[in-house]
Image (cartoon, rainbow, N blue to C red; front, side, top):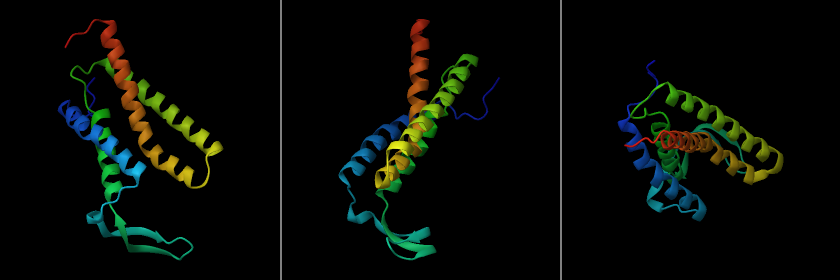
Amino acid sequence: MKAKYLFSHKFKKIGWIILIPSVVLGFLVVLFNYEPDFLDFNVPALVVEELMGEREYFGLINNNILNEIFGILIIISSILVAFSKEKIEDELISKIRLESLVWATYVNYGILIVAIIFVFDISFLWVMIFNMFTILLIFIIRFNWQVSKFKKAIGYEE
C-alpha cells in the first residue's frame, strides 16, 4: 500500500539540515533571551493584551520576531523529517511509524499531565510553549531509534 500522505525521501535530508541548527540555536536564543534589534518589527496580531491593560483585537504590536522564526523553522523541518518516506517504505516501516506516533502522543500528553499537576504560573506557559514541539521531536527520536534497531537486527547495510 502506498502512503500518499508522506513527503518524498529527499525532503528528510532538507529537514535534518534545517532542524538540527534550528533546535540548537532556538534553545540558546530562549536560554539567553537574545533579541537582536534589527528583528524588531510592528507585526499584525489577532489579540493584543497588555499586562494589566485592555484587550484589543486585530491590532499591531512591536515584537522581536526571532522566536517566531525559530518556532516556524522547527515545526516545518520536524514535519519534513517526521513525515518523509524512508528509502524503502514497506509495511513494517509503516507499522513502526504508526506505533511511534501513538507512543509519542502518549508521552507528550503524559508530560503535559505532569506539568498541569506540578508546574504553575509563567513556568507553565514555558512548558506549554515547549509542548508544541515535543510531540514531533519525540516521534522523530522514537521512530528513528526503532528503525535503527530494526536495521541492526537484520544486519541491514546501506
